[in-house]
Length: 325
Image (cartoon, rainbow, N blue to C red):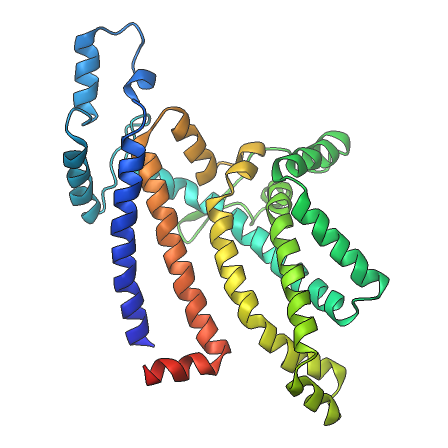
């Protein structure tokens, strides 16, 4: 296992290097942030000073080498708009996004696996058909439309929940979190439900498909022939085997929830990384855009590493094949 982790980390360094090159060239070669950030009435001397101050007067290759040298020291550049380190801006917004993503993923897992099992064990029953119809609906409805409907119903018409903002936050191990207060939880509910809907549908369908397939396997038939209870057959033999692909998908989807929470954060004015990147794109704040994308790539790498470790714990064959390698 240590050899596997070290090898994956070395691969991750190469991935980050190539991603930094692609992202930097893609972002810095498009548009001119000076046109947005500087006063339109400024003269050519002011514009030239602004370009030099932002380091945009150098060739693109030289800009990348400077960026790479600073990045190796932990500096991903200074925001053009806020004039503070880009990584500081992102880390300030990250707890809000992680909090929302964890709650949304938790809701999808805690509801999706039992509902998928139910639909897989009783596919012809009316609850099973209703669950599958609901999962299709969850796939079909656009996230921005669902968010607007949630606001209209639960915030505007019923007045049960707030429609925007994060609510009061509390320090927990030096990190600001909002789930420790009732008002913070009320602010979390609507965006988390909106973000969880698609993931919930995905996990339901994946669990149902895995359950239907597992029930036809010989090890399940043999367990039933031995006289094991239905609860033990499902809980030990079926659930343990279908969890292997489900864990993989949950890990990847958790990364996508963090990366693509932009729509939900924009609709609910949630002060996370997604809203920050939208605001940064509007003003072509290049250091923040590049830093955000590299942070997301790093999170995906760490999540995939964690998924591989959990996968090896669930499936002994992975450990055996690794030992042989």
